[in-house]
Length: 149
Image 1 (tube, rainbow, N blue to C red):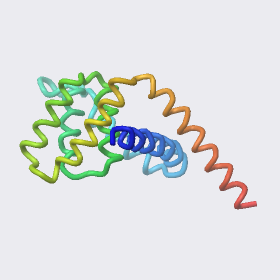
Image 2: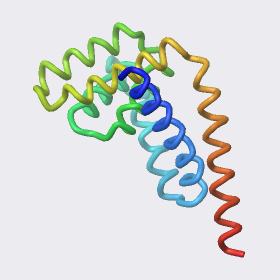
Image 3: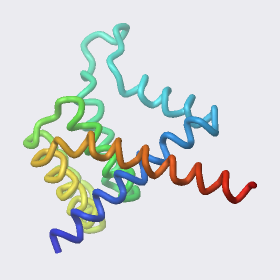
Image 4: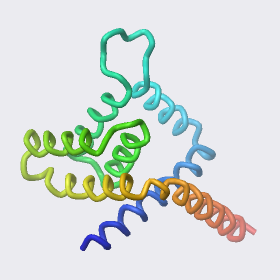
């Protein structure tokens, strides 16, 4: 079971990363929207006394757990880890999500936990994901060029 979840996390992360490259190139609106999200979740020097970037991302993770796709959950966990959230901080978010979201959140929390283990235990995988995503993107681009010719 753990291996299947691990493969699911790895597969989703690679696909999401590959699509990220492709969509940023193909759709200006996609890039504008993702930049806006990054800006809104980022540090805002004009906001005094509010949550820092890591805590804002943890809040977003809690929201995502209440009804989003596995891809969104994997992205939120990855983003939290990349911005300095500790395993304990993310586990607190998972706990609160269960307490406030009820039974329907359980499967999302299970997947988030697997994504967390994958990120925290094996942080070197990030470079491998980027490399694999770039490879998938190049293959898709090559196949598209072949089909158009």
